[in-house]
Length: 413
Picture 1 (cartoon, one colour):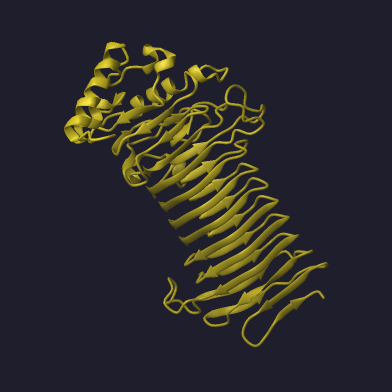
Picture 2: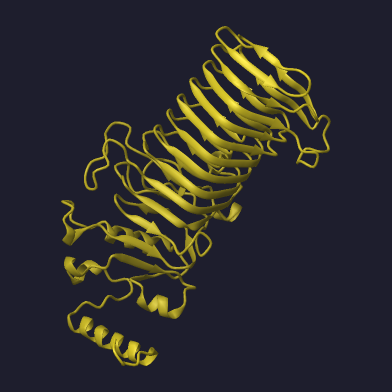
């Protein structure tokens, strides 16, 4: 830049000139105004929504500004605007993203995601969507959710980098997030994700859904219902939930790097087939850390701590490796189904764990129910503070070796 002096004054002067040129070209966007009005070629790469408590300069520059009441209306308007890109996918009408400022957004209705639209907050603790007496279902499916899909054909949609705040009793009966797909048809339209919807959620902090839900049932955290194939939940924390923290009823989906705690239901509840769970921990779960009811499930690098039951496996076939059950009240692992492959597990009890005041601190290490056959199981159950190391029997075609203390539980050769 030669000998020019560059300082804050010269930068701001240059910015003012550029801004004036943009204004002269008719490209100024005002809060709440649809950016499509200025022509497809000049649409912003992100449509911005400011919270009521965002700084003034952020509110002034936002496309939409919320008032702190029914904020879902402004957010949904921004999402709908972002979804007006040319369905052919050409660059002039490409789909846009929606960016939420920091601050709290108070929602008495659902945030409705649309196909191809990425909704991003300012960070998992900076942007907070707060449920306010949210009791009515809208969008896809019949479940009530703080975040949902707009209809059952929505695909390629996602949300990340924000908090979903359930508000406990004042938040209503909603779950945190619900994905619901079409049970009869593959998704159609732009973008092309067929045959799977492939929706996603990550970098979320989900908290305070620990009150009664619809019909007195629990309120769940992240939910993918049947036919939401290709769902990806990852890199999130889910805490203080009265239902299941993660309920995966959708096949061909993936759960990764989740931290789950303070749950009255299950930490991770798998109902759909061919679900993968990796690098995930569940603690203080009052039902089970992992309830595996979906066939062809694969779990790796998973841990349960201070829960009623560690792993409850009732589907076949299932593969689990590198599993830890740390200080569970009733059972470290329950195997109810045939064809379970469980290798490299550890069951033990800490002296200062959640159940240190009960005797024994843990009732059973590994429990076999229904005499399951064709098992391949190897691991260790520590004997300290566990009432019965292994209980139940295994059926034909099994290979089981469980060490711990001076004895080895052995079946098959």
